[in-house]
Amino acid sequence: MRWFPVVVAVGVLAVAAPAAAGAVEVRCPNPAPSQPFVSKPAPELGFDQAALDRMLDDIASRNTGAVAVYRYGCLAGARYPYGPDQQWQSWSMAKSVTALAVARAVTLHLMSLDDRIGSLVTEADQAHGALKIKTLMQQSSGLHWNLFRDYGGAVTQRDDVIRNALTLPFDHEPGTWYEYAQVPVALTLLGVERATGQRAKDFLDDQLFGPLGIPRDAWYWQTDAAGHTAGYYGVNMAERYFARLGQMLLQDGAWNGRQLIAPWLVKEFQTAAPTNPSYSLFFWINSGDKLINATVDKRNIRDGGLIPGAPKDLYEMNGLFGQRVTISPSLGLVLTRNGPVSGGQDPSGPADEDEFDHAFVGGAIDALRDPDLPPFPPYQHRESTEPNDPDYGFAKSMREPDNVLIAATNNLPPLPPAGPPRARAARLVPVRGRSSGSACACRGRSATPRGVQAHAAWPQRSG
Image 1: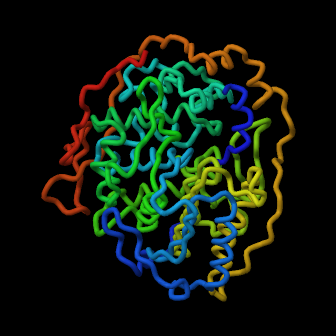
Image 2 (image 1 turned 60 degrees about the horizontal axis):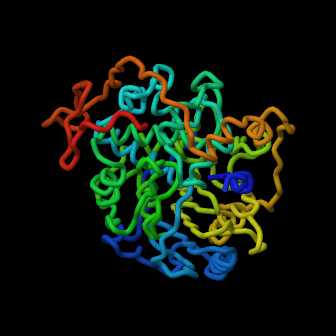
Image 3 (image 1 turned 135 degrees about the horizontal axis):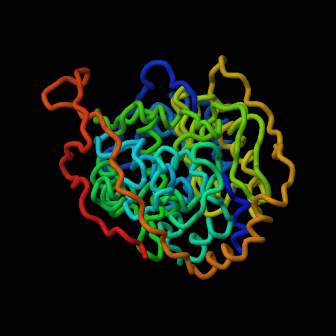
């Protein structure tokens, strides 16, 4: 998540990118459950060993807990200053995990990107209930953004994220305005839980993380004070398990011959939202020529896309303090970095995210011995092209004492009356016995895969 400066403020309270042609080359088998990736010498994977070592040593020296480079499904090199089994907080990479939970449920025909949130979270009022899952995932809900109310729960640990989200007013027509936010993500994940009849971790253990060989006891997902899985932070696991998520995506959603995420959904993760050319469905993408970043003191818009000079098909899971799972299908690369503090050149200070990404991604690409790859461009600091606006961002948030007080005390407004019942979006469900290319039956409710109890009863009101 590209929001390091927000931490300072919160302290007051406490790709339309085309996929590479053809299947991505894989030279190593997917790792067995609980086991590390198969390693190969970096030169066999197309790297200059000395150049790769320089990049890894540089990133490892920047308050890094784990950094690794994978190519063609093989581990080319890694550094683990805290050991390979240390669990790391995902921060906003959890948003991408929420996206994967949605994608798995959609692949199983248990929900649709076009489902209205009110068809699943039935306590939502009429306006909130009209929001589509896809609109929420594109960070285009139109809901009011206040820095303290949005980030406060992660600091105070007293939030009820569902009640918080359902009592936010609307500032924009849904689907027309991008605003990177935390709290509305929780509605998306609650929608998954209602559609599958399972808590988020249980569903992922059964249907995604388990098949990927990530043991149940190897990770956990933090919850808020009301017991909700917030969805926007709090996935804790070791680097090699985060890497499995990236490798599965590199393989178009497949793992050991099993299609866990439908390829069209992997494509959606690489396709820009209408409101931000560098964002898709809870993933950051590099296909655009402009980046609308997280708001702090002003609307943060930068020219050049996510990582200038990197392949246009690159996309990533991105979290606070330099948490990364970066995927480049055209180069067969998965890059991971975890750590307790951002990867700044000065260990005592935070990183400039552009400089960090230039050193991390650019360093890995420059280490490739490919004469057709141009040298990675020199690092250039970028500022927002938007002027300071006293009626936007941090300054405006400070002038909303009610929201500051809500964030500090968790004295949330009461939920508005629930909206009218809403039908689920129609979903195409393959008819048993027919080939994958044959006709599908269109159902309002799909067959339930083994291990999933669909549309089970669930507590309806959150306070």
